[in-house]
Length: 586
Image 1 (tube, one colour):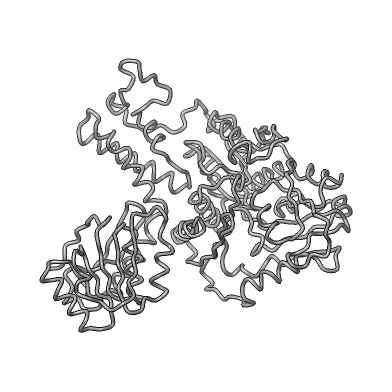
Image 2 (cartoon, helix red, strand yellow; image 1 turned 90 degrees about the horizontal axis):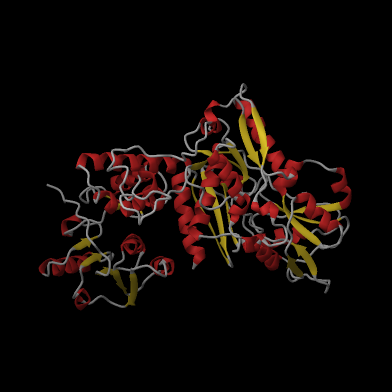
């Protein structure tokens, strides 16, 4: 007849796993997500089991205990469930027999006849749990189905379910028929899924406003103002109703900051639109952001990364512009409601570049300092400051603000011994004879000097569902989009802003050793060579071989860093980002 798949609350329940090898490790890994109090008992508990304790979140409800000794029947007293995972069939049978007499649910690995419950193959994303079982007849088939389902589910679905759960009580309390509430739930779910596909974050507060359970500007003390759109018969969701009529204008208005680099990036978007959609006219609208206006304060003290985006987002919502062009690394973690990143252009060089005056001195790698003088390095990035201190011995970091031209001028005037710039920006600005004669440029290997999340990516923001958003679909680069989504997810999981030293770098494994060989000049022994040697030592001198259809993800937070490898798709990339963030936060 088969086994019915009950879902049970395990938080705080006592579970016993007898066995300390790889099978036990897999069981522990899955169970810890559900918060039980687990005890693992075996004469030898291998590292693959113990590492699960190290990966356990500090605030997790689960607990994990190890007892490295022989099993005793008394160990099963008070257990809510038991898993026998030893390589001793007789012992497994003894455990199963005792559990059956005491009516303790028991699972015996590779022996379905002795099981009173089966351990399912799991797909889990937040509150979403999918369990797959073949009644113990074919674990291989269960694993195949699990992989197929995991590939099918969109990344972030669990977060959407959490949000819908938060708003559900308010919707259920409405004075409306069940059929009407069902229609509203369907519309909410469709809206959330559309936002998910476009990479837009959604909040419970936004959903509440969208359905009218709370008007954005209503006076809650005024009688009758708390009535919802549902109760007045208005079931349609609203999306950034700002009075604009962008679809009726002939030219697509592209919003941009006014620096030379920002204008060049906007021009690249214009060129991409012209190439993909030849008959469409575009025009640039230059806007001044808060970050442009405040030049005497470090970014980390002004606020979050929205200092370079908020004015552009306001212009989008008011209908002043149709597109906003951003350096993706400067985007705030949460976009304004109703806006999405509709396109990313092909990624440029991700590396940072050390810039020094022509023929000037450079910082020394750690352990090789031959100059006691400090090297004054201009950078306001906490990430760059941390990495510079780890890579070079004699560096003192000082804040520096301004666009590329301003920073190079400050360097030339002697305010700093060197500065760090993004190579993508330098490349986009093109060759400059004055720069070539005045400065030496040293690209830094990204494997060691980890780039900022989304560095080198141009992102195009639009109003969700607009004509402009449809146009942007034609210019977006799929490979870059994958890296953008994975790196943004890592930052979101870290809850990191510009006041913290955080980084994320996703790329196809095939690009691991290609495309970034440094071009240095002006020094007999450039600092890059020392850094590459340090990185080679870090990798134990071995050049790794990775499957072609895979991605690498490096994530850094403060002093901690991790590298993961996985399948080259958004779902797997998101899982990697979440796992990496969890590991470095410890």
